[in-house]
Structures are given as C-alpha cells and as structure tokens.
Length: 228
Picture 1 (spheres, helix red, strand yellow):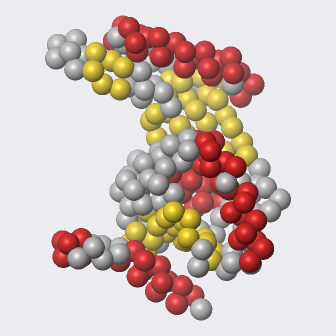
Picture 2 (picture 1 turned 135 degrees about the vertical axis):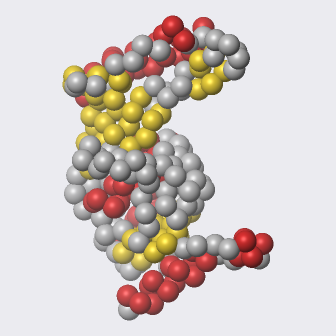
C-alpha cells in the first residue's frame, strides 16, 4: 500500500504532487495511506494543490479579516508586519474580496484536476494535526471517500485562527506574543469548535508509548481487512 507521509506542507511539494499521483493512477493502487500525524500545518497552497488530486468536486475556503483594531497593542515590528499583510490581501488578492458583517472576506475556490486518485483514501491523524493539515482533513471529509484513523485533530473542523501573526508587546509584563490576525473559514455551517473525530479512534496506553507500538497502523490494517 502506498504511504504518503507529510511532516509539513511546503511550497516546493506542489511540484511533487502530480508525480506521485501519476504513479498511483498508473499502478491503479486500491488504497492510499496519508499520514498527517505530527503535521502542524505549513503552506496553504501546497495543501490545496494536493487536495485537487483527491477531491470528488469543487472545494473552497475563505480568509476573514475581522473588524478588529489591534494597532494600539502592536509593537513597532508588529505594526509593520500587520500593515504588509493587509497590503498583500487588499492588493494582491483584491479579486477574491467581498464585504461581510464580520469584516473583509477573501474567498478561494478550487476545481479537481483531471487525473484524480479514485482509490480508497485512509488518513492517520492525531492531536498535533492542525492548520493546513486540518484544512486538508476537512476537505477530504466533505469532498472524498476518505476514512480517518487515530485521534481527534488538534485543529478545528470549521477553520482556524492564523494567516498572519504580528507581534504584540503586553503592556505590563512586556511579554511578546504572536497575535493571529485572520480567520481561515472552511465550513460556516459547522458549529462545533473542536477537531475532526476519526472513524476509527485509537487509544494508547503508557506501555504502548514506552514500547513504541504503532497501534494506528494496526488499526489501518484491520480496517482494510474488514473491507475485503
């Protein structure tokens, strides 16, 4: 069974996805295992481009610039970073923009590639699966036949806060923190604030961890056996 292990989404992988899918479709692989355990995110374009080879229909997401006024709390570096980020979207992405009650929203829609993988997709997730990884898991849940094995994702099903993280200096402690300025929205109708719960939940004991057992893989193999 082919296994696609992704530790982090990087822009360079965009050139890799079509090569992988060409091999999968040529070999007519009945299963594709995608391992997103420990993947805390990365480049959104890389994640959306991979999804174009896995989707049954169109999929989308939007970036919300909420009506917040963080400027008084931003330090000098944060103000510069925040200004550049708004310039990036308001100029570079202006064709995607529309106004909403919550603020400016930039909407992006994608179509599947012609050569879409049509076998069974199985995805392994855990509590560190977040950000771009959970964009992919939500899309896979809504727009493919994917089954999920492992533990609930750390990132939310309906989106996550992020996009840009300008620095804020807290006025009393002088602690510097990153402030997530935007909201990435995947599913407006999904009201739960937690992550995707897997179809097959795998629980580890302390002894399992000490013995370095990979019970997720055992669950994947059992799942395949029951589907034969």
